[in-house]
Amino acid sequence: MEFLDGSTLVSASKDGSIKVWDAASGTPKDTVAGEKFAFSTAPGGKEQRAGSFLVTTKGDMVLVHHSDDGEASDGKRAPVAFFRTPSLVEVISCAGDKIIVGCLCGAVLHLRAPWLVEV
Image 1 (cartoon, one colour):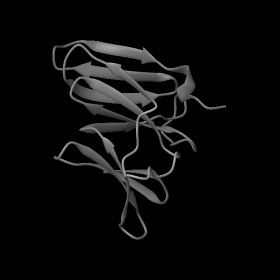
Image 2 (cartoon, rainbow, N blue to C red):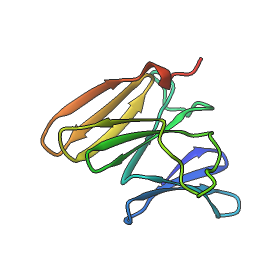
Image 3 (tube, one colour):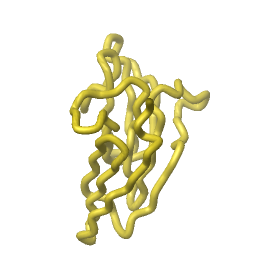
Image 4 (cartoon, one colour):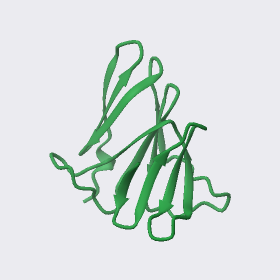
């Protein structure tokens, strides 16, 4: 579990979903596909940026979700972008316009996504 902002908590579930929760009420706000997650952060910083992205993994896929799109009508948010990796994703991290992915096969990918950094 990790806080997205002061009022939103994100957790990974063993059922292959990432849940977005209202921290004050404890009620689920949204669900996205994924087994692991990371937040995009300001370059060189650890603080969460307003209007940032939630990056999740599902098998050999990296899925990028806009964190302030609002809840989808079916309770599941669609990704705004995705990347396929050479094998299952073991580790994921984001900073600035970079997504770093460590794969089960030993590959380490450095994905550059300039649109992650909102001006």
